Length: 385
Image (cartoon, rainbow, N blue to C red):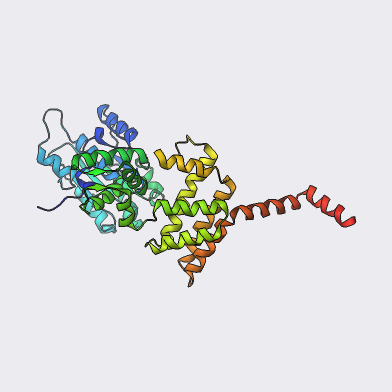
């Protein structure tokens, strides 16, 4: 029997199961209950946040008649994108005007079972301009038995003429704590043991995408380890060890360029690429900057437990200006190194520059003061004397 990925097995099957998009689920459910279902919808948001799942749930809900329960095989067909009345179209591979004309031609046929024929067009922004123009009239006044649900990760590429014919819903990135909670439930259902720190790290790496987080958890479970740990995650993805990264940041705090270079070299020796190190370093520095600006209790930093306590103490050794400067340095060097013949030289120069950030900030402050009217006046007085 073939294995089904976690992201598919643990997809939401009802409005109540949706994670992180409850306001949208509630609005759509109320629209059905009040008989205010529009003819076209536009679901916008990054990948893996539940757009297609919500579209299937909505299509299933509007096709459920009050006088009869929907057969299990029909529910399964809708939720897997294989139903005859709920047609899913991948606009990336069906983007031409001919496909749009075929869709319009098929709209005239009534659904075989439920009251509505629902067209779910995924990645709709991939349609060509002529295809969009072909759909305009049908999108505005479709047959009474037809509903459109358009899904896109790039709403700005969908023509305004199409957007104006739809009710738009923007799906937000799913908060890290919500992803962590869902991953915990999945691990319990799978009979797997995982450290809390590991699940939190996986949720953060998902970057707001439940699907990405579940796919990463799938990779970890495939390792066959009895207990999933943060060390396994670092080994699997080639991420820098947190302890080594902390040592590097401590060296930056004291301006110790020698220790900073040695710590950075050790990170590279353990298999972390330069780009990954800079990315992880910038992420940690961002957390310290937020802690400096907002205080130790802020919800803008996802770290918990001992890791948070350590970062709170570490943040006290920096100031906001230096940290923001250091993040910019990481990003600019990361970008420049991709096209450089000497990426290691740029990487090492970046580490030294980060270690000197406090001194550079002091020099900038001195120059700023000297450039002020008061500073210029004092300079003139010194010259006259």
